[in-house]
Length: 147
Image 1 (cartoon, rainbow, N blue to C red):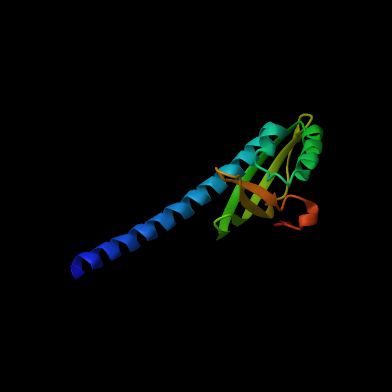
Image 2: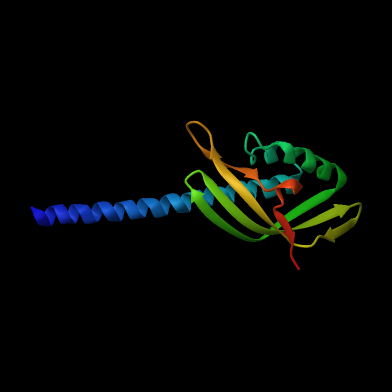
């Protein structure tokens, strides 16, 4: 009987470890997906799509991006590097290096790469989804120029 109990206990621990790994991996995939959605929204200059990547109480970045969408004829956002740190089941910090390529008239310009520190939270009542909740605004002091 002790052997069965020990085996069940070992299996339960292994299942728990696998569940934690899968949940962590799933969260990282969901975070990457929402950040990729943001990049697609910027590339298509789609405010409604961009809005889907932002937390409910973090809508000011939409005003700023609307100005950029109106100014540039085309925008491309390349993600050069991304690091996701899960602080809790409902909060993550993402360090992301990116670069914009913008078009005005017939001329394309490649902007200097930058690094942003984004705060993401899971929100929703029943089906929680990851959303960007900080790091996009100049006052967030999250972007640093990279050489």
